[in-house]
Length: 158
Image (cartoon, rainbow, N blue to C red; front, side, top):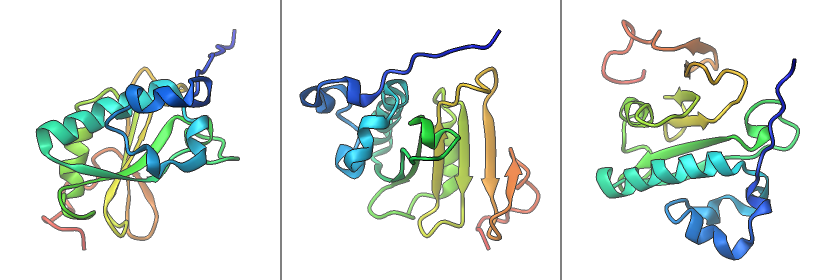
């Protein structure tokens, strides 16, 4: 028997309620694609950004969210690519961002040390929600599972 999920999207919520529902999310960075974002993903991101702001004194920049035609989490409105930073994107080590994100119930967390400003992919995928998927992408664009960088990371990404 296949599972079917009813997804409530931001577009199902009156626009005048968005800022009140997600006060810690930089909604201005989502543009028109925000209407396709999954509400549970936005709720989790708001909690993450609240903690980042209040406890870590971090800001965030959203690099990507909903992507039309993407068959995976971005195309379902269940993923965001984000950079957390203090004063400018890139000033918080990606491993610090990763450890921070793992405190929350994200189903998938990818870290990208070779972005211009290193950051994270965060998602609420529904296909593998019995465990957390963690990965990273090297400078050649090759994806690796989990913490396979241990043993090669020497305090900086070269």
